[in-house]
Length: 199
Image 1 (cartoon, one colour):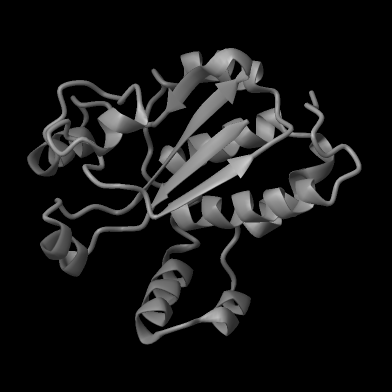
Image 2 (cartoon, one colour):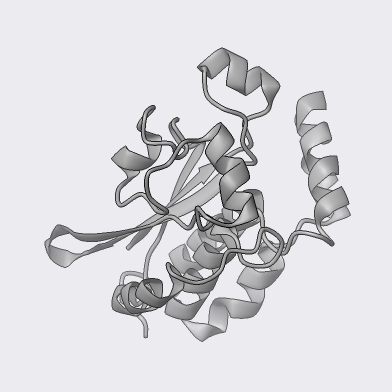
């Protein structure tokens, strides 16, 4: 099973209310197998790159990636420093494949627009899921004008408009991954293979 964690962006209001640094949101996941074997996947920029150095001014990390959710949310570790806004579960995946891929990916070059935390989680989940769900999951991960029909508040409208405005620039954001996880969970719940691991 995969447990996916999504952090919404911490704008000025969130930063002031929760006493956390400003951030653009984040996506991470925990791969949980039989026997409570877990692997935590949280992809951050290299510390020595320009984006990593800018982030150091806001979040003072001592290493590139946290190894647990507890470390991710620790107020002094320099990562997210707060609880996630969404936790979703993805079942029926090849967890061992994710562990193997993560070992190579965690040393790869970060690219805010094309290879960020959300891209990595999306890639790992897609790599480990039944191929028949790929097209549906990829379309669920794309924000469209149709998403404006489900706006619940003025704040929500502002967030959705921001997402639409940047959708051509940023390949995958935490909210895109959130939609994909929800869609997969719904598809998997109705699948005749529910409860079986697929490779």
